[in-house]
Length: 169
Image 1 (cartoon, rainbow, N blue to C red):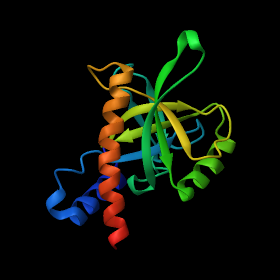
Image 2 (image 1 turned 60 degrees about the vertical axis):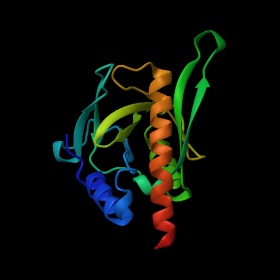
Image 3 (image 1 turned 45 degrees about the vertical axis):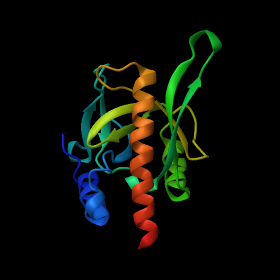
Image 4 (image 1 turned 90 degrees about the vertical axis):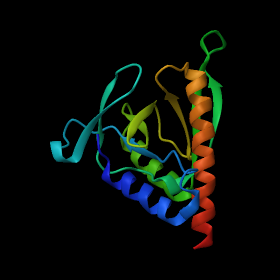
């Protein structure tokens, strides 16, 4: 599956970091689930790697790699069925976009895409006002905790390099 915009962002970032290309390994974007009324040219299907859940998403991302500030691993839910999530923090511009979209997209999902592959999902129960997004993430051969820890480490390392390069511009 090809996501041209994130791929072009990845190439631009790799060009910016020059000799550090081996360090920027994970580029993330966030997409919203496409409504049934969207045309086939406005959406693409993505599939989560472990559960196999297929989700139609809009082809235009809500956030780019440079919109991510950091990630954390959290546990949430009732004490008897707590789950592990990857908490993604986005900048104020992306937070505003997500706030506007989630006002209208209740009942839909946000999808975390890393390096052109869907890796996480977040159900939209209410409008998201704070720019903090908790994704249930999946990676083949890993528990949900291991997947969240792995993605947290890789995304934070890549985000740091991207932010440093953008600040030097």
